[in-house]
Picture 1 (tube, rainbow, N blue to C red):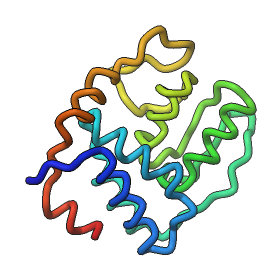
Picture 2 (spheres, helix red, strand yellow):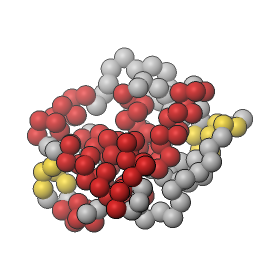
Picture 3 (cartoon, one colour):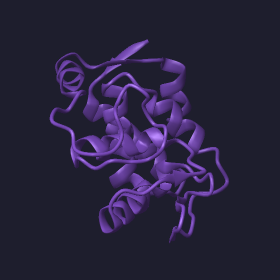
Picture 4 (cartoon, one colour):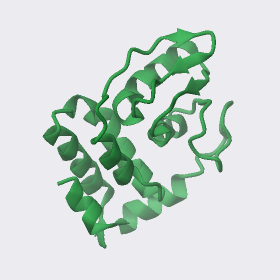
Length: 155
């Protein structure tokens, strides 16, 4: 186990995406990965899983039920999901894979999402306080302990 800064985690995530030829997703996924690790969620583990997925894109269209993410990882389609949410307002998301990657945007941009990403965080409506600010501040000061085998798997 080694301690890494949030900046190191973000850079490592960017590099892992680039090595797989997926750097077009780095501006969304790498900061989300660092945020998740900073609040004690498995951002790097999810990224490693996603990088093994064969599907990295989906055609996303709003329908009567909301938005079908077609089991494509939010690591890859999260930026598009966020764009559609901003355009249409609250939507129910279904067939979600790695929905935790939507949490950072939901918190920092204050929009509700209708998928089970974090049972401890109320979905929908507006939030009066960012419940993760204290965890992020501590992670910024102290770093995040990361499993060495997981870190190496993304190298």
